[in-house]
Length: 100
Image: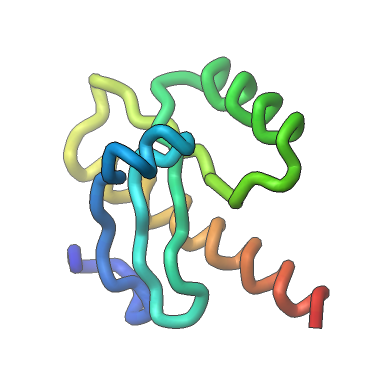
């Protein structure tokens, strides 16, 4: 686990071919919400298109977008990943708390 990531974060891996067919590009592992799925995009326009596709299929699993550009440094990518993983985890926790 990279430095600066929270204790509940246990790593991230690329999606398998089967997962990729379901719109998942990467999977983060946590000790409290389990797996968090991500779709990697290179622009805000790509994220908006992805969100519209997700809205059409409400039964679909939650997949969170993250914008990674070719110009991003390794540190930029780590910071974006840390931020999006934390935000996604909080959304999942909030949803679970409302559902209980």
